[in-house]
Length: 204
Ligand SMILES: *[C@@H]1O[C@H](CO)[C@@H](O)[C@H](O)[C@H]1NC(C)=O
Image (cartoon, rainbow, N blue to C red; front, top):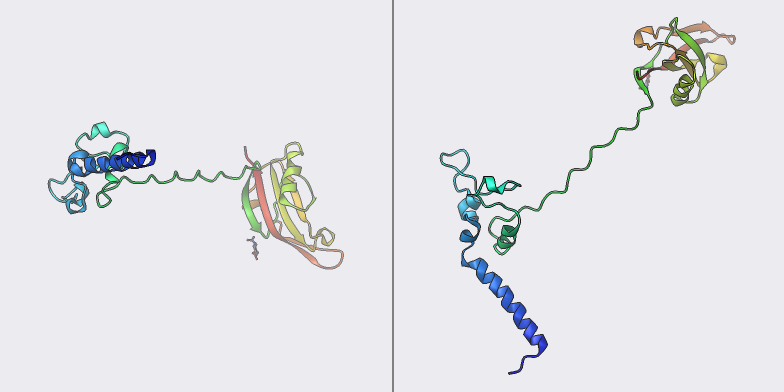
């Protein structure tokens, strides 16, 4: 009989597979050094709360510390793959996602929020109207000695403006100084009051 190249290739492939299978099926327990089948509790027949228990396997980077245990990494994994009912090497989990990075600081920390009183203190520097808290902080950054901003709505005040009042100070203040609650009668007869009062101190 004359082998065609195709048949010869097929023959070689089949024989190499069966050679692998024969090697592995000789004795899986001898190959991996422990009986990793389910009947033997995958190498650890005695539960860990009972006397004389021993671990059945090791996973890690120090296999030389546990020469008596099959290390479920590397070549042994390819052998175990022939025995689907025996213990298999674990598929490593994906690395944990990196921790979320906090948003970059704007250089201020909040000392109080949403009070109904505005800061009144002797270290007052100036005040104006702004659209946003960020604009008030930016303003403070440009005023010499400014270390604290107080933003709030002066309802009925400031000519009826709905913008934020931005009040700047040279020292930090907490809620205890936010005691200007309005109460000033306006030209139109209304009385003003304070809402949404927030305080922000520059980080040292
Ligand atoms: C601020 O306080 C008022 C009551 O004074 C409340 O209605 C509002 O929901 C608060 N806002 C926030 C953002 O907490």
